[in-house]
Amino acid sequence: MCGILGLLLHDPSIDAAPEICEGLSLLQHRGQDACGIVTCGHKGRFYQCKANGMVRDVFDSNALSSLIGGMGVGHVRYPTAGSSHRAEAQPFYVNSPYGIVLAHNGNLINTESLLQFMDATAHRHINTTSDSELLLNIFADNLQKTGKFRINEEDIFTAIGGLMEQCKGAYACVAMLAGFGIIAFRDPNGIRPLGMASRKTASGGTDYLFASESVVADASSFTDWEDVRPGEAIIITRNSVSRRQVGKAATFAPDIFEYVYFARPDSVLDGISVYRSRMAMGDALAESVKRVLTEKNMTVDVVIPVPDTSRVAALNLAQKLQLPYREGFIKNRYVGRTFIMPGQQMRKKNVRRKLNAMALEFADKNVLIVDDSIVRGTTSKEIIQMAKDVGAKKVIVASCAPPIRHSNVYGIDMPSRAELVAHNRTDEDIAAAIGADLVIFQTLPDLIASVRQFNPAIPAFDCSVFTGEYVTGGVDHAYLAHLEQVRADNVKAAADARVQGPLDGVGQAGAGHGPAGGLAESRELSLGCSGPMNGADDTIGLHNSWKLS
Image 1 (tube, one colour):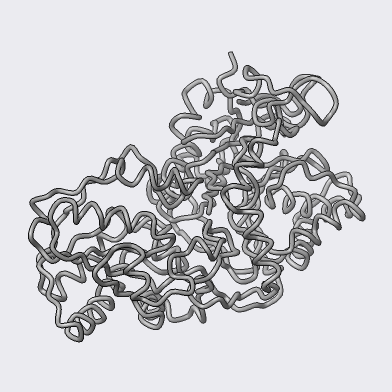
Image 2 (cartoon, rainbow, N blue to C red):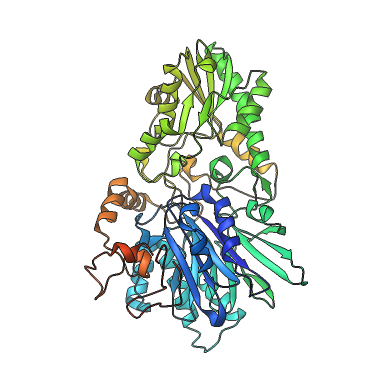
């Protein structure tokens, strides 16, 4: 899961980078592994800054001042496919044709056949293991086929339409064409979110924004937020806005897990308030909790949420059951979201750093802990033990989502079925595995109803992690087994150790001096942000001078 952002300012003399940085900070919850910005300045020259780390750490005043230009693309990364090496920080860049930059949120499911096509037919080199770079090169190859000196909107729509026929999976993308404008498109199923907004300027012009979530538009005084439709492409220049349905008709099925966990509560995705949907989840879950507690002849003294995502649902649940709601866990806000931390051991280690249980809310009480979901069970097990350590008599866990028993192939890092605590386990088995006295899950019909009631026009949701049914098709046992191997934590760690710095600009690639292969990594150059296209003579790609003095 990642966050993407594109910004085009009406006045090209105003740098877009500071505002893109602000927007990325609002999307930081969508990825904490790496971030990047590429801007386009005078005569179509690109300037880049990307590195592993949080937005606040990568983009200081010096970095932002060197990102020149009135339009740009930004990205925050949480790795699913590929390794966690800084070479895979986005946006990605390709110089031919025309100079293209792309940021991608999602995951492709037919990468093997696309890589074969790139090698045997398109003769394009894919330098990382990221499917985002592959997606960019598919787009570039389709544009290359025009053979034109200068392209127009019609050519771009045709290229994206071809891409949608070639690429299978989930993708919400923002791209930038050197000296031309910014482009956004969304896969035909609309699995990953993307929207656009506009803002009138004092001079009478209009600024345009693309972002993964509407909260970015709200914070930057953009209005008229609307979602990019499934299969739609939108091209914005300083002279026009063009939009077209280029993908073949398919079932619109946004990922329901966005509403459960990933999106900020103050965002609106596909016409649905994340906040309202979580309130409804709490109301529906309350009915299940009431029924199960009655069946088990158990009582609850207090409702305590796992901060922050489950607070809204927990409060509504407590009100509906007429139980006290208490903040029993105090969160250290300087530790990232454990679910999107890149390694299982790191997740486990950080749970207790992240939360502290207050004994006065737990001691001698039967506690109902409300969480948004139970994925690997790592966090839940630690939290339950913390509650018992400070004196809870019984710990009951209520999950706003149904049991997650299947891999996600559309951009969420829960690929290995063996890692999922609910896989091949009953509710009783899950409770035993995480140390709870009882576990109560939301039913899938109730979850869907909680979200859909706010936009009945949405025909379906991607619920594949609960059902094992994949809306795009093309996902079989062999594919899942391959994906699990590629994405397993130990494989990802091994990939990091092997990578010596692919040629992705000075900073991100750790580019050394010499031919590709066996490049020695230079610390000074690898911590590098920004600069002209191609940079120095010994640099391939965009020069990246992050913290390069």
